[in-house]
Image (tube, rainbow, N blue to C red; front, side):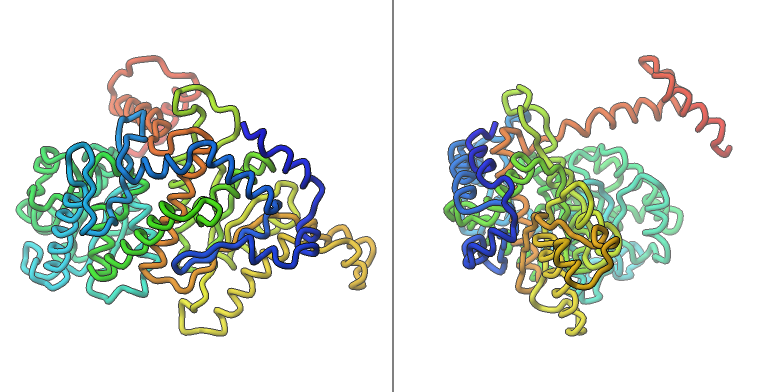
Length: 531
């Protein structure tokens, strides 16, 4: 599929990053790009200017510029669901109308955002209270997938922006232990629940919402439900049946995919936690990167280059995973968020036209914060047999008042990229006086690729820029692979089968016989279940 890149792969085969840097002192300057408050240094990847040029040419040949414009203007690029893909409209300036399918999308977005802000101000000020007249002190977000990972990640990342007005907790797993932990120590009279489910039919979310409702009713009575629950949904009928008034329902649109939805009404818990001003700054950061992605030339476009380097590593060098390693404890949930964003978007095996792909698509995305990972899996990164490309995310400004520790943190980040790229040869190890029998054990092959994303400081605006960069990286790669990055049919089969198995557990007959393994495991579960 990428035959255009083969000559460059052949030319660079056997080359090392040491050689590339030794022969090109300006390499890091050229193979870096910046926009807003972000700098991407991709010079520690096994490619050169000609390879980058070839990748840009492939992107142009695959129609990436046209695809970008089609997304921003509301064409139905999600072809399997016949939908526009307009998460970028959620952060579009209020004075920039966008008419799609006969509707002014910008006006609709601003209307919902205005309702969200008015509701938030009434809760944070104490004007809106619970059933007993007490002000809310905690918001509990109940969702799963995109209705949980995005808001949870952002609130954790922006914890230094929290002013103590509202504590935010999150529940996603249908395992009752998750809800129990979130409710521990809470006063029902001061607890507000936000139930996030577009269709209000998501099994895990409704199970948790129902249990939370019972918890509240047991303490405050049935009449309290309307005062303590709001919904982020489009299913007014189901929301009313739950006991939530329609004026406490915040909607969004079918052109917002779950994993792209944190800047929609799904972000209500973010808004409640950090306040309207900080949320507006978050949106502005997203808009910054949207504008850059739409207007910057491909060869200087940060998300595009991030995506193209990933395609090079995945399809030319054959590396099948990506480690996301934020050197910031406040971004500890970023790898999990990007895991869904990337793997649910581009974990596809057929093209837009339904024919099988002829190349590998989305990588396996994983990671955790540095420096923790250095004492866990970096051994494999440096000396294992499977090279893993790494994205290091670091900040210039300290995230705490302990500035000397921040110096140590940043030094570790840069040292790891240096060690991954250049390693340590047997000759260097021997020259350091290491015993001959230990030399092989202390040799580092290097030549392990990495990107470094350096950010000025962790603020709502820079966080928006960072997340949007990865959103647009995903689109870039989806276009090159020819897949639909905006559907997720792969999550449906397991959910359907689980529903049928629940019926069997409740004594109902299934529609079809089960395989012997599943049948036996169900029997063991029934026999061992208490009661």
